[in-house]
Length: 332
Image 1 (tube, one colour):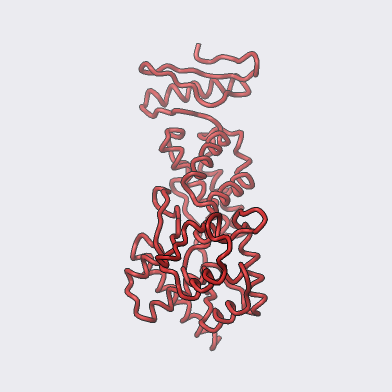
Image 2 (cartoon, helix red, strand yellow; image 1 turned 60 degrees about the horizontal axis):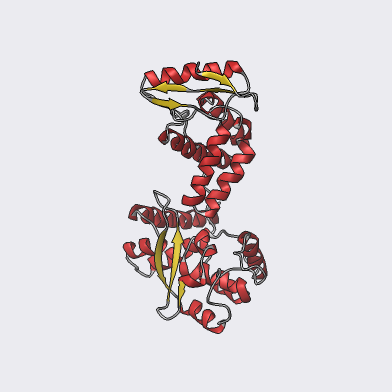
């Protein structure tokens, strides 16, 4: 008999033999009917050549997926997946993966769209990656959302600081706040790269620092060299204490990296009495300044850490569009 009950836990399990191999999906079922249904489904899938290694719950696969993401994704992206998963996908935790269909997913995205199309699209991207990951490991036969797509989102005009605002912002800061702004301006690095920057990544003799990212196709770590700008080098040389180990942006007490850099940036902007803009605006500022100075596109691509030069081209085009829309506001 392929369906049996564990006397200790009271849960029902199945064990199917196919071509000399045994398949025992999941951690069991609460009712015998559920186990029998899974038994029929598994046998049918095996006969059709669609081999399921596991037919466990959403939660079981989700925990395994998060462990995978922790190794191959950056901290920010991993934290976002973890938070959204436990906040938005908890309703499916006790369900089998193959029970979650396209209609149910479409309803979920529609509800999330009421709050924000961007929130719905973020859920879509996380679930798409999750289900594709499950498919690759034969936890699922079929991708459950083949006809669903992201919602169209109207792009806002991105606020990009000018040279005078950047100088004013730097002059208004002291200590680690000034270091944060200098790193953002002088490296054009992603905030996740700057947060993970350690003193071992700063080579003052060669005047080079190394930014690390996992924003790659396979999730592997990639390192790129960034020459240290004169203003940043001057700061390092005038603050020589504790430049041997630990994170560059860390609290003096614990040595761990700063967690909420958004609040820190907000305070820096308020201190300088400058309009609010995002971390990414510093990358746009640097890219626009270098492009206007005639820096070749391939050099910009390398400094920004783009894998495809087309991304850099689109990046610069977005800057031109933002400037054009800003000018149009004068006549609005």
